[in-house]
Length: 509
Image 1 (tube, helix red, strand yellow):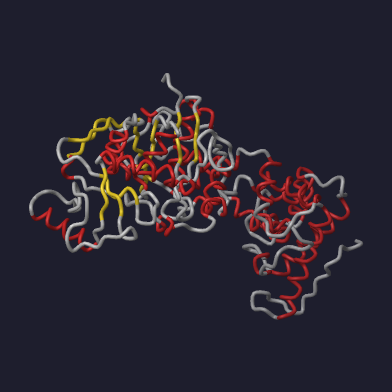
Image 2 (cartoon, one colour; image 1 turned 60 degrees about the horizontal axis):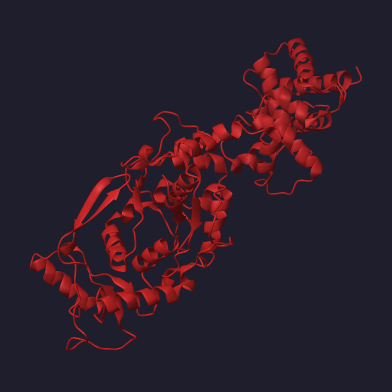
């Protein structure tokens, strides 16, 4: 490819950026990086009635979060500024005058009702579904139609014979019969261009070499090609990307899960994982490899690897991929990312503590928004609130559980120190305690797990105790004994001896 590759991502700020248009941005960016070209961001904000406040910032934030950088565009100097179409109105008005002078465009005063009548008439006469205003080819208004600058728009006069053809780099040759195309608006009554005029003008003036966009824009291509021809511009090459559907093969929507890119950040997906997942929505390395590094993708991103068929968005697959990327993170990196999802601010000591916790939960963490819940047993002076019933293991009663906890507390106090609280030491020591009590490992370690963490399922028990530290573990076992004591005194039916009293301090014996 001899000429410089220049591609663009041209979103409309009419809402939050969603998976579909961010996938378009990603494919354009990868194509530019593969060929050593330029990636341009252009804000197409000419539809003033649909603009959403904050949408531009959300678009740029989404790109930044995914590390999709741009060479020209908002916040970046470039030779074709401004990159917001609302600041380029003089260009579009000048080009409209050119088309009017050439006879390729005309003023139209038709109302929507009148245009619909023309469409019906064309359908009834077998001339297609389009409508060509009665003013086409005339200098003034047709009798009965109002004339005034406030009402008029400018329409492009499509050819009435022949075909318009494009060689799509993904779909091959596609053609349209010109007589079936409608004369479309290029300049609205408010002086703003429509998408069709603005996109053609800017793609030419910004020297775009390839237009890679969603399949839904394919029907607009004959309009754009005829505009390029009327202006005498060389059109770029076109590549229309496959549609994205849910697992039910319906077009991707809210009912398939989150679609706005910001929601995936809020839910704790890693940008690297989402980027890897999105690139597989229509492209593949070899048809089987799913986890691909960014550099591998850039090195191999060619259009012949893009499919024509719709890409399926599988939320379960994204979750699986996110887990893979989480497990591949260094502990300090994972901890730093997890900290953003823990609602209370962490001081320096707690951040270091989280670095020790991270490897323990890494295998079980699927999304970063689980960070607060999965780490909550590690924080605080005592275990999170839990039902003391869960302390009592199968085949045990409350008295035996309390005795076992007292024995564990006594052995930990007498046979460990803050400097001798490693997981191997703990497993050997408490393994002997359990044997002395004639309890199975499942029973004894199960009650210790609940006492230390407040949960029946946790990361590896002794590694967890090591990270928690001696003081915290012993305090939590003492709290568990108090919980049992409260149940025993209450006469709860599960605890068969309400007169039993538990001493929650280690014995001197």
